[in-house]
Image (cartoon, rainbow, N blue to C red):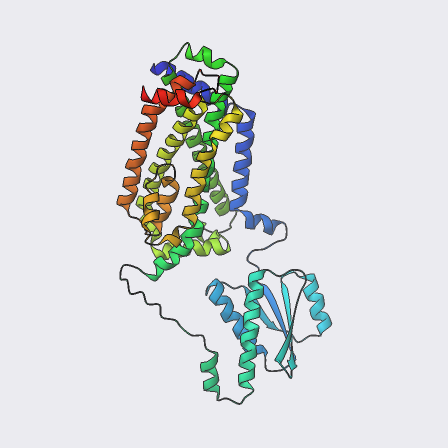
Length: 439
């Protein structure tokens, strides 16, 4: 039996790996991931630059606005981007307006601010750029200009300089959380992980969909071509069933390893071409997120989060492949299986969207119970574990529940598979299926 099992597994794997489609797709994935990790260098090579700051030229026709506005732009940018981020270079422009417009037109990173007196609104400001300005830089400038307007109005009222500095200084908020088990880092983590973590589980989501479709389509193909009768006449349905599961899971796990290798090559290329270290080389917001994860201590927790997540994902691969094989056996063609796989897709989507919205269910018993549910626990449980809504014990319970679900799928699913694999009629199919489960 073992020799036949491995023979069928090797044949199934060969059909998947030794194809032009597999080679072409992996070449595209490798090139795409390497390019993604080095997207800033690619853009720079074509004339773009992520690190180039905006050059803000201020034409101050009021003779009192430049210092105040310059300071407000710098402080507002620091609030948004952090102390180390140099987004704007502010300069007092003293040439003619015509020269300023020419420089602005020639450089897409130049922002021209012209400030004039206005008897009704204190100051009037025009903002000129060569093309469109991104929303966030625009909002920073808008806020800085409005704050400066208030400051200029107050300054013109002959208020004492010390009082003026008190009015214009940024307020420092002391954050206090009464629950001693919670910290401000955890508070920031919920916001970060609710958006960042789903990005990292997206490959698992896509691989699971691929696994379901691959097993289902292969079983249906053998049934449609009547090749199933020849196979089952030489091996038992049980051997055939497990060969499909082994081949499908080995292929998907291998593809996941290849994706990690492609990502590693991308990071290595990034370092070799001089884009910086892995942490510092990551551009913009992604680098800030990584730094936030480091300071919050989440990196230290990865020692147990990663192994638990891998175990859950492997068990979920097995669960979905079992269910896909069972459903494929009772369908007569690929179109019928496409309809049967819809519930599995919905389960995946439920887990994915709950992982995204995990921070909204703080302390909810409902979300904790969902983290135990097979088929979605591999997506949901790690997200909840990272933000502290469940503990390691809860993840272990989810693993045990998954193992039980796999046992039940094998025990009762194999009975259905034996009946459905050679059934080419959809008449009384569900009746036959439940009868097989009882027997």
